[in-house]
Image (cartoon, rainbow, N blue to C red; front, side, top):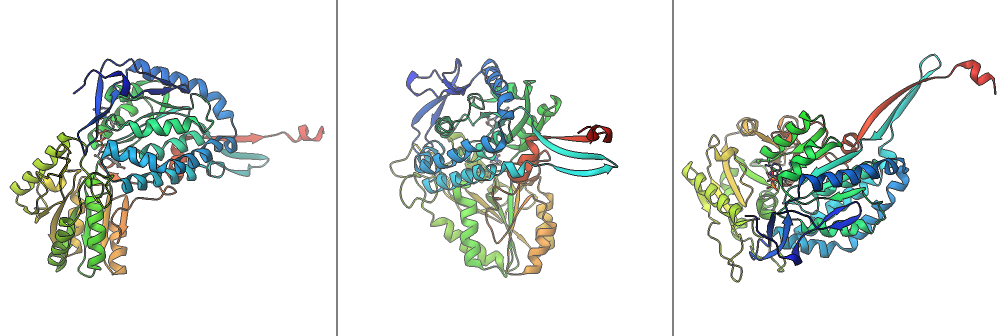
Length: 496
Ligand code: NAD
């Protein structure tokens, strides 16, 4: 619930190269999910504050777009080094506000840095193409130009990585940028923007506005914002895509997920167990690429079930800064009770709770939002829960007689973010790669997160748009194509 903020911990906005305190009348508590302690307050900034960020970004744009790409990437090289130098500090901030382990926080920062590195290739990546003599004496060129002011809206689960799926590409392409991070985890980007301040980026090129849905809607409605990048839950992704479209903006909106892994009996069961356990329970299951349903085929039903239950039961759950802790809490008390009630729904809908992580108590951290690893066996494939994103450390097991039936389960899922297969058969792997209805495919991989130079794909209700984040798609998204057809009369050249 919104509360009045004590003055010392208010998270500021960064607009036109300056840190400014929001004039918001409502502030939200930011709490450490492992301790329940209040660590800051996020302002629910207003449409007027969004407008001042847009004005700053619009004012910075003409000079920034004229800055040669080679010069535009120099601050990004400095940013890469600053992120490297501060990776431990940022990792600790992520653990404190999000709850994931320190190792997980640092791992997401590594992916953030990779995106900065890839965007440094813009002088090559942004090139167009041309052809002489499209007709006699006429040449044609395709050149890419930046759009103007662009914005990104990001979720709570990767406070350090997801903003960098967008920011480096947007500014390297010559756009100016506004970020609205999740109001639940504003501190990582607060620190990252202090680092951005040291890179030499001109004022107004990157801006940070904290808040909730009013900030989002103000960005979607502002006529000077040309493009929106969104990552979050499917209902909000749908809203952002529709409203951006109605306002004539281009949008890329990544939504929720319910990821399946198929385990064939010929899989290396020890490897599959380890990797699937990391995927399902890493980041407390709060990853859009977390495996949520394991479909076992044939005798894998028993071998995998026994092995994964043992692996999950042995995971060490606790506060993410403690050595040896493998899994932290979920983000809020509300999220904990939602996950626990979905476990009860699974049992009601016919699953057997093989491992029950409800009512977890971690000594010294009783106020934390902990749910321990949970396994639901034999969840009916047609149950509502089989299609519901849980976003917590819960793995459901479903059995199939063969690949046809297993693939049919994936086909009926409303989501298509990721699908994985564990097997030692090349032919099965090829069939899976060919037929699986998802945008990110893993073969003997638990979290098929594309590297920064590939698009972060996603199909069905997991993505709305055409061009994805990262890599060449990012360049395509953040630039407009201009085609030039040129003729110069011969007589003119003869004069010289
Ligand atoms: P969320 O949808 O609640 O919030 C995402 C962003 O939207 C936040 O910045 C939030 O302030 C804003 N927002 C929330 N409600 C809004 C509304 N009614 N109108 C306008 N804006 C609104 O998501 P979350 O809980 O922060 O993140 C978890 C979700 O994100 C999960 O569903 C997860 O699968 C998804 N996710 C997807 C990907 C992907 O790549 N597909 C990656 C990470 C997370």
